[in-house]
Length: 467
Figure 1 (cartoon, rainbow, N blue to C red):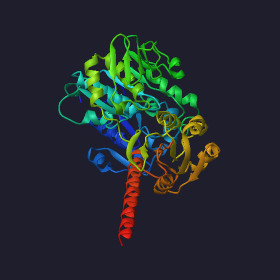
Figure 2 (tube, one colour):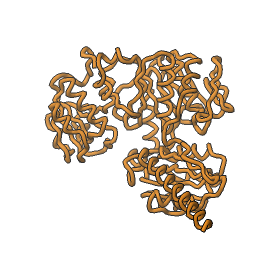
Figure 3 (tube, rainbow, N blue to C red):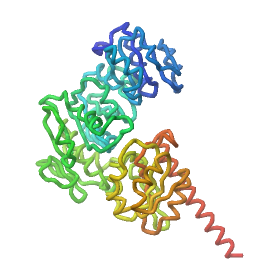
Figure 4 (spheres, one colour):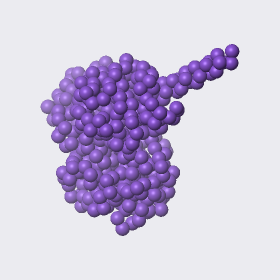
């Protein structure tokens, strides 16, 4: 971290309180301690790794997050997972204390161009694609934020000043991070799509949309906004930035559009998509990434090179196996109805859908057209199962499963040759798993165990016939 750069809120001796000690919260506490702040860190739980904070002089208070700890505090740093209506954050705001998130804190310590990617679905894929395209063009890139490594953690790792290790930051930015980022004016801001999500945290869909729009509010005329021409919310984006639109529906009025396995860049040529990137929303993702990378100087050759080498991220419409004519697909990252609709739109075969988990307040009836068109049966799991059945159970055969293993077994019994069994939950995973990745791995394990059981049964039958 460059010693010459200072955050406008952080000076040596300032007393900072970090609320929430997940990975980004711990990184923020370490960054604050490194900058000379006096740091108190609280979490109502007991996350791992906090002992290392104490070694840095951070006062760690676990099992505590009451407003009483605000006494003597100058600035509050809140982790993305901490709702802003919790008593401690609400009390800080009543006292007019500055409230900033880990991302906003970290951005104050660097002076590098930023590409910031947000949207309900596709953020991680597009962030990774942009980073790959810029790297292929010879840029030194850090890719992270809500994806992988928090920016504060990156600033604290490695040797030498940050500006000597990279020359551009490509950040995935969630709505939760935007709520507390403060001023942000990315060189390129990307909004992929907006559909109802996180309504268990936001008071309304409009409030969620307002959070996404925040990314563009401080951009000036020299900056770029990459926006989805097919999404009505993008037409409402405020700001003065130069706008570049992309279309996944072949709208040739856009700066980039997709047709038949290709992405066309207006006046700049076309990108040929490999089979793994020609599925579902990926062509539109490539179009968005190409516009963002192109705005920062990446040429068509570098963009094509990155696309050719790119491997789709785990748990996003990933084929697990195909057996007896049935294809098993892991789409565990689909944690909202918009993502499930995109998955069903990408599949032109009958689907047995495994759906459910922790409810996020979305309207499952938004899936009704796709359930009617694609889904021959659905198996519902988790806390949201009954609500999903009540919303969609009149449109297809619907069953309840107590566990994911049970859901896989039921789906296997329902599927016929030519079908797809799709795990696309439309829900968070935290009722049964630590995250969508663990849920996806559990699905793959259950499918593998099912296949092994079928093989063992078939072998036993052969032995019996031999006798």
